[in-house]
Length: 598
Image 1 (cartoon, rainbow, N blue to C red):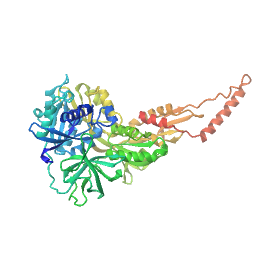
Image 2 (cartoon, rainbow, N blue to C red):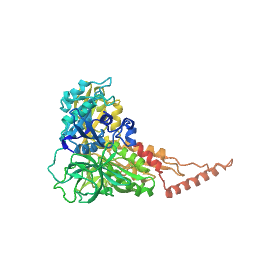
Image 3 (cartoon, rainbow, N blue to C red):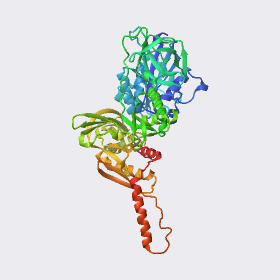
Image 4 (tube, helix red, strand yellow):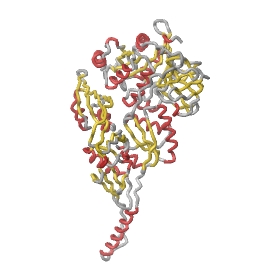
């Protein structure tokens, strides 16, 4: 097909500004789906996405549109996630496009993730088509949204298309703006095939399905292809596009976005960002891939039943193929057996991966307390990267520990500034500056330890600002901190699954909370169990699980008190002996409930 009639674009916005609803309307307007096939959130195919109302995976779709100039255009759209934890999905989608439709909610205006996504798009040199969505809302402020586009994002407010994805207002205007402003695919100057792999998934019957954007050449069934980074060669079985269901095609040409199925059986063979070329006539150079992401949050994932270890390993391999921002490696724990140390981009990412393991792969899993990567500088000059408290060396050989910091951008209404500043200080953060966005909202810039924002910071922002606050953050290097390892001892034995690296000022409160929680969930034994929180050799908190009591004097009625005393002494000796040889088995439910409570 003539490349001048192709437009490749994606939709970017803050979470919940109407990306998926707009893509539904575009599918409906272009006739990609008939009325009877339409449903809300067509492109959100995962149950999880539909339940939570968020987009987790980027979804490509090809539409045919008959424009006002009389020509028929092929529009390749990629719907992207909005949450900060899925920013890697967005960056990969941008690499496959020439333009981006930027949505701003007319009622909420520009938010933290809007700014972050615009920076990503401008870095990729994409053409932006601004859209002010939800203009049908009673509290929509179109002029304010236009002013914010100009002042915060330096985009002319007058160029914004006014639309309502819910009611269908302005949808044709958006399509015409995409055709007018987004440039058609440009030739890379290569004769040979160059296709960028921007996503992939595993199909039980067909192996690995790669999602590609062709920059040069053509690809068709029967052809031998080569992966340029590994040199592996495969035969193409099938090619096609999504409209939005997979549709077979005879061939894909330069500018097309679609899928390629070759005889790739192993999930490890294809990397996201890979360049596919013709095995007989390979391209001279690879396409620029995407920046490799580094996980920010780590957690151990273990099967509840140790016999499921291999099943979990296969499931994680398939998930990694579908979500390359997720990393994993094998590890073992005394308390939990064999499992995996997994890396995530954030806490929502961790939650979604765990939920997908449970639903898609039917796995019963336990996840340990989330932690981040620390730089440990030893006294002999060696630097260790520690993401698991168990691997922290003895503090006598540690010079100091550095923790990762992030630069956080928080947008909130004016009346909550005081509460937000207090929350930032509670989390050991430091306020850098405040900028007024408009008469109602401000943007606070703060630097804070990643360890503090990883668990509940996002939830607390939402509760403090009644749901109006939004957060975006970027990595800001490592800084020295007064960090220590907090151990939990049960009956004098340390339990590695509950160990954590915490700031000295927070250690006592965390130790008390964990000991209290464990006291509730550990079942009583015939002897007393001590639950202690310790820093090195110093105990900072203790709770006791009382022994099950048996009334040994029940058979004594009347008579001298010395008979009862004799029986009590005998019972006490027995309990002491039992405590020496008895072991406390912590049930799996206890692990799950303690780790869930955080």
